[in-house]
Image (cartoon, rainbow over all chains, first blue to last red):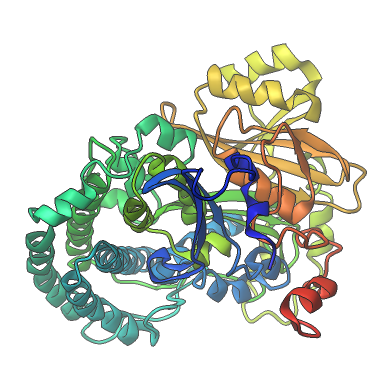
Length: 384
Length: 199
C-alpha cells in the first residue's frame, strides 16, 4: 500500500517535526472498510481534536472500467452494465441509457412503454430513498428505521421481481421500449402498494421528524449554500434542499413526465435535516406520479420498431435524467458501427461526493458520517 | 467521430452489410440527421470575438461549439460570466488515434436561467494540454482528474492533477483507443496485489 500521507498534498500538512503531543493536528483514516462509508470509500481526515480541518476522498476501489467495456460491446449488450453502476436505482440507470440511444437512433418508445417506464422508475426512486433513509438513520444511531424501510422496500422489489425476474439489477428496459409486457395483476399490485406506502412514510416521519436526537444530529449539520452547490455541480435532492427548485423531470422533461402533475420539494437551509425533509417529500411525490400513471396506462405496443442490428448514424448525444441522486447523464458518440465509439457516464454520486469536503470543514468527526449519509452516494456509481 | 463536416461521408460505408435482418424495414434507415450550423445571438457575439476560432453547430437539437484550444480558457470564462452557464455538468474527452490532433476535450455546460445546454469542444494533440477550468467551476477538479487518469490529458493550472480512480503509480491511460480492454499494468498488479495477473 502506498504511504497514506502521499495523498495529502492539498491538505497542507504541518511540519512533521512537531511531536504528536505538541501538535493539535491529527490525520485519521476512515475506511475503505467502514460500515458508515456506504461501500468502499476512504476518507482521510485532518482533525484538530474533534474538529475537521479538511478531508480528502480516495476513491476507485470499485473501478471496473464501465466506459471502456461500453466501447467493446454493442449498444444492446452494454445495456445491463449500466444497472451495475447505481445498483440501488438500476431502473433509472437503464432509463437514461435507453433514452440516450433511442435519441441517437431517432426512435421513440411507444406511449405504453413510456408509462411503464415512469411507474417503474418512480418505484425505484422510492426504493432508493428508502434504502438511503434506513442506512442514513442507522449511521446516526437510529436503528429502527432501517427495519421499517427495508420491510417496505421489499414490496417494491417484489413488483420488480414479478415484472422482470430480478430485484436489484433489473435490466427492466430495452432500447426502444420494454422487453416485457406487464404481468397479470401488475396494476393491482402497484395500486395495492400505493395504499400501503403513505402510512409507512408517515411512520418514518413519526420516528424521526420530531425526534430530539435526530434534530440534534441533523439540523445545521453539513450546510451547503445554493451557490456552492452550483459551483460544485451538485444536483438532486442536495441541490434542492439548498433552495434551488430544479428537477430535470420539469426542466427538460423526458419519458412521459410532462403528462403528470407533481411538485418539486425544496428546502431553505441546505443542511442535513432539510435534505431529509426534501427526500421524504420526494417519496410522496413519486407516489403521486405513480398514482396518476397506473390508472391510465395506454394500450398498444411496448416496443418501437428497432433494427435487430443497431447502427446509430454517426453523431453524438448527451442525454440526462433525474436519477434519485441527481443528474445522471450519458454522452454517447457513435461512429456508425454496432458498438459505441465512446460512452461517457456523468454520475451524480461522483460529482456530489466532491462537495463532502466543503460540507464537513469545521464540523465534528461524527458529522462526517451524517454528511456521507445525507449525500446519498453509491460507490458503484462513484467508481464505475 | 470525425468532425461534423465530414459526417456524411463515413455513413454510407457503414450501411452495406445488413446481416439477414429480420425486419426488412430496418435497412431503409436514412443516413441520419446531419449537423446544421447553429445561429443565435450568443454565437454571433462569440464569432465576432473569436472569428474563425469557433464553429457552432446543432445536431439532434443539441448545440456544440467547437473552439480552438488556445481560446478555451477565455471562452469558458466568458460563457460562465456573460452567458450564464454557471453549471459545468461534465468534462470528458474523446480519442481519435488517426487524427493529427488526437483528442477532443468536451465540456458540457448548463445554464439554469436559460435552461439551455451546450457542449464546448477543443481538439488537442497527444501530450498536449488545455487550461484548467477549476477556477471557473470548482466541480472541474475531479472531472479533470478523471480525464487525466483515463486519457493522460493535462490541465494547466489544476491545483492537484493526479489520478483519481486508478492507483497513483498505474501506467497507461485506459480510455485511449490503443489500450486494449484486457490490458493492465501487470507490474503494478504483481507488486501491489502479489498475484501474477489480475485476469
